[in-house]
Image (cartoon, rainbow, N blue to C red; front, side, top):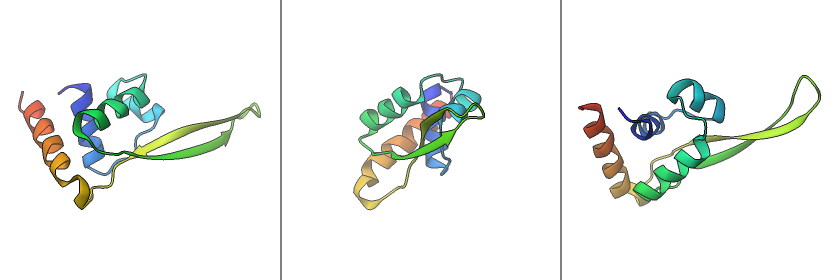
Length: 91
């Protein structure tokens, strides 16, 4: 399975992906780029939620959580995405 198909599978399964989970689960150090690749390849829109935090050293920062909610508007794109993931899983 490719990195892209693994990310697609996680989104289809309803998982939320962040930079940290992207690195741990997929070995991907640039999850925002890969999310953009998913959106362009399949014509879907991935939900983004900004998470603000303060580190233990009092530094303020933020990161994004990415998730996908299927809808009637992206029904055809969703079929393409599932087909792609199934093809990659069978390799």
